[in-house]
Image: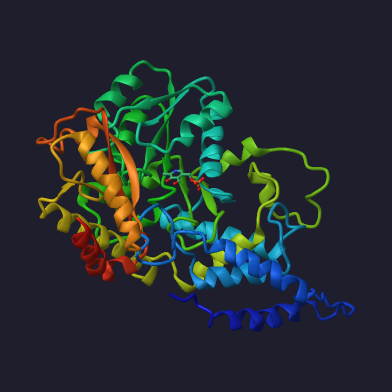
Length: 445
Ligand SMILES: Cc1ncc(COP(=O)(O)O)c(C=O)c1O
């Protein structure tokens, strides 16, 4: 395989355009010592060879996706100025680009007004959401499904807010009757609904969660760090679609442009429906907010310094690939789900495999067929290793008997969980590569 070298010429061209904004300065030419850089960079490139090939369609494992060339180039170009989007003083143009790009993300979820900004990633974005939630309902619990991202419990610990997991059902969604029982105690302030769980790709029933939250006077935070962009897809099943359509009724949403939004790490985004959430961020900063009376993004974010280059990259990507339901970006997101449904269908029709749940988004779970859970685990590990030997890179996931047993009536559970295979088919190219992927699996099982 080879990387895209062609687009690099554009970087040099764009630097010339960028230089056009600084022509009135006295001449100053940074002159890096190329001879000194070469061996160091060569060593770095050689070290980087020791990676799974995340960028290739035969990488069908963890939640990893390469950035779009326009994002890579815009990020690299912006680094020559290296703006800091904490304040207008540190990044004027990039702060405005962040506001535009974030408004487009809010519009994708149907919000005409919002308060939001970019941050390091999903963990930081959820931290802000839960921090605001805990201030709206001081002393009350935060709950999330037992399939929610592990950081919700940990963030609650950091914030010193009580946290409780809600059991999930055999479809991997939050169990609504368990949630109702927990809410009826009256000590819950916030329900976290996950739209795309990290391990198994399920979505919680947002419509019912919002109805219950209204009854019990709770906030609803939607963690759509991984799944958020699927709101643009035209091929979701009706239950999943209904949940996505309810996102505008939530209080806050997290979506990660560095997952499905074609951005380099770290680019997360927190959005609040009510701009009044900004009041919680009020602080003094005697050193930073000077050159503009306009909003400095540091005034509405927990982090201080943030990469302006990340905002430039996201802005450029959304300009090339607008977040519209009829655009190329949406088609590519839908293709990822097509790939997942294709793999799931092939596995379901083949006695050599066990499947678990129909993919809601683009994560497929499966395992080699065996009569006991311990044998399923051993075979999954072997298949994972054998596939890697053929350059097909999968991932493993440990799933509980409560999820597996209802879906595997013929398997005896001699262990309380089983190791299964997990494929995040996050590249649209996976759809066209499915015959090849299946050919490798077929040959090694
Ligand atoms: C649903 C969900 N929430 C939160 C996170 C944490 O995001 P990050 O790794 O960007 O901090 C992830 C990461 O996979 C996720 O899938």
